[in-house]
Image 1 (cartoon, rainbow over the protein chains, first blue to last red):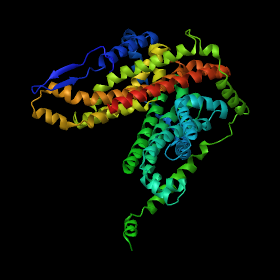
Image 2: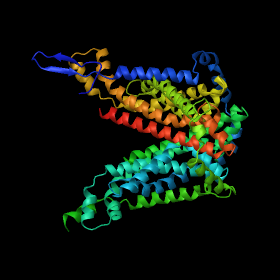
Image 3: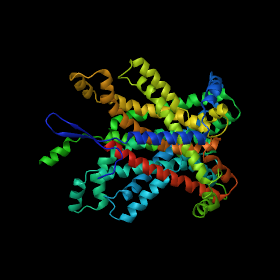
Image 4: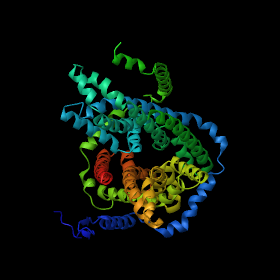
Length: 271
Length: 268
């Protein structure tokens, strides 16, 4: 019996049976949530008065962005394409490299416990670090430019696609795989013909979804010098040239929107 | 011809489509290959990579177990506080917006406009919001909280909408048939369905916000990002190592706990 400070209440039905209503933990969770909120307010210096007094500043900046500086857009195409290239290359290569790692991490294909544990650890370690911080480190190693950004996106894609893929593989139906194994196909061959077709639609769909997110991330990677449109964004924000910021954000929003529509179309087809 | 062969022949022929898709992907790959260049590889890039790894295995222990406001533990708590408060505020503000953009509840045009607005909110990167809010509140964790709230609204309301639109309405019909009032229908028919999924979504978003909060420090919006970039620019690799270790441990811990709670929550 679990010790519960609040006893469970009982309802006696007309036919004499008793229904036990479990006490929920909701009050405790709410209480803990309130305490955490209070502590967070203290730590971060959250204050509503500042919001009310100075919030208009935020809208002043927004107003300065409208109308956007259209003439600046001619300078934006190259960095914008760079941003897309970075995320495209990073996503494709990352998704390809994620496959072997996912196979190694799937405990139903790779029987070596040690190997699966290490691969899973690598995948989760890669996933922990935020892309921007990886990009920051990469700029120190690969120098400023698109290479650092591609690297950061590549690593993130491996981790993201790899994790979802190995979960898919572990949940796949093993019947066909075992049958193929039993008639003498090697592990890789049985994987190719039994498991791979099962996970392929999901694999592609995850990759597309990841690519979508990567375009978003890539747009800010320039902030730390990792190439793409973020560099100009940082520059314009630094100069407080909000009309330029406006056109950059507008272009970015359109690009992301278009890519999202395309990717959503294909993902729906895959499902 | 036996049954198996017949079945195989029934399989539609996708070869043309597959070849075409493959070609498109290869062309895109070749087009984007220019992003890959080692021209800018700094001469001491490898040394730096080695130093970062050395810093990771040989961190600055003083910084790592320093409990004053300058130490890694405090910075991590601050990062977590930013993410937590931002998620809470965003989670509440996203609820009305989510209902307004659910096409099953409000008229289609309104839903479409709110949706467009949310897409716009989502596309602007967190860092840009961070820089804008710094003008409002001055540099510090407060700007981070506001940023996190705004980005959370965009993401959370999108995820909420999916839940709202997938709401099981059969329950409501059966409740109506046994004579429940509207309030009862909301309390016992809608609320239990939504609250579990919403909570799971919020916890997931907290997980993501933690990473973003770590990044926001780069623009001066509080958290662990600022000390990290200072340490890197000063080539203090052991400090970099201790900050990265702290961050990795925190994120892994939060991810583990949030996964545990979510599986327990969703599976009941």
